[in-house]
Length: 398
Image (cartoon, rainbow, N blue to C red):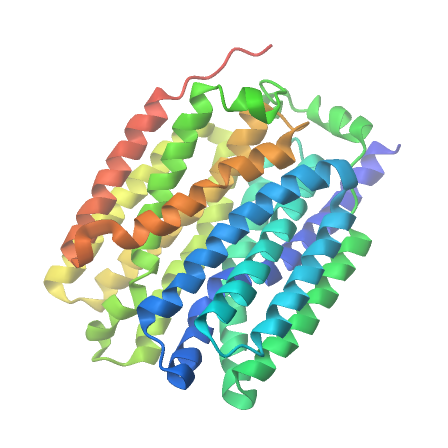
């Protein structure tokens, strides 16, 4: 094994991983498909919103399955399975005529497929970068965050030109081909390389190497899990309402409102890289506390926007929300790798990702339908997140 050559090759794998996660970010593009389906079938917003909740739940379950499979069969098998689920999900979604149909196809098949590919890609890349866990988590998850925005724009254009059924078919073939290409190209780092690189940067070495059952007995895991639930819910509370809230600021112009809401997505991607790099350089506590501070600032800016009707203040508020929300996933990823090790990372990471199920239901419930209530809930969640962070204890290296 040539360590220096492998160090160069791994950056190519990182670039490939970003491309794969850009495509898998389609899970966040549901709002683009919702409008044409509501128009054609007369479904309500509440009915179509269930699809997103189903897809997020299946995404988490797919990640859990991926964690169990990838460690045994490798990323090639898991990414091939991902390609199958995306092909089946989008192709069958192009034929639906009922709510149950879209829940099963887009929500179930596509959500599960995205979870398979997401976990397999990130867990494989983390093995290549034991010395840069936070940075690599941030870069890969930035791709995942930007994917929803880019694919949403692409999907909107295709729907306008070709209709939503044809768009689903195009996505079925395109994503299956891309995932199969990823399966053919992505490789797992050898154990010798991981150990050689890890010992070159002791600051990033895992504190322990423990399996999931032992991880679930650790107080630190549950503190981080609850932290992730409430701070993810804080971001989703705004993401779920961003376009609707922004519309009155621009005289009801939905295009401009959507552009304003897009600030959350842009900052989301940037926040993932910043928090990932901060985890490597400043440690977990500083990074987690910083996310709470940014959320507090976002709550203040959102409250000010509500009182003033100012577009610049709203823009700043959306950017702050995106930065804070984007910081949560890289912390989850790097926290699990640092506290519980790389040997069992794929499954351990998929378990902590289950926080998204609770967050995806908690977020839209925040504030009881009142914008002022939502902004207050964000402030409370941020304060609670800071308290939880201070309760996390650095374990003794064994």
